[in-house]
Image (tube, rainbow, N blue to C red):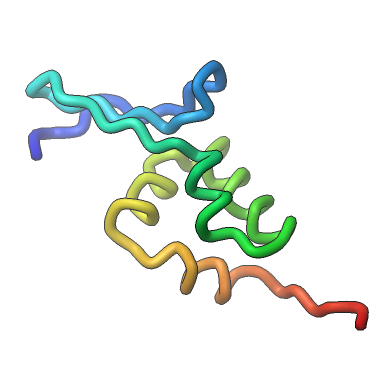
Length: 81
């Protein structure tokens, strides 16, 4: 792919949008990602934090990383049962 020229969260579509110098664009549906990989509210919260504070990091995690492994490592959840 070409050089990334912008990456931002579009609140109207709930997508992180990446725009490249050649005119191509990738749109990541954040709701669909959360539904697929987040198992609890703590994991959803971590993904939300990335979306709002580091959309480039979020996009890199979703496109090139292992979001399930990342969420297991950064969230601490223990059931009350």
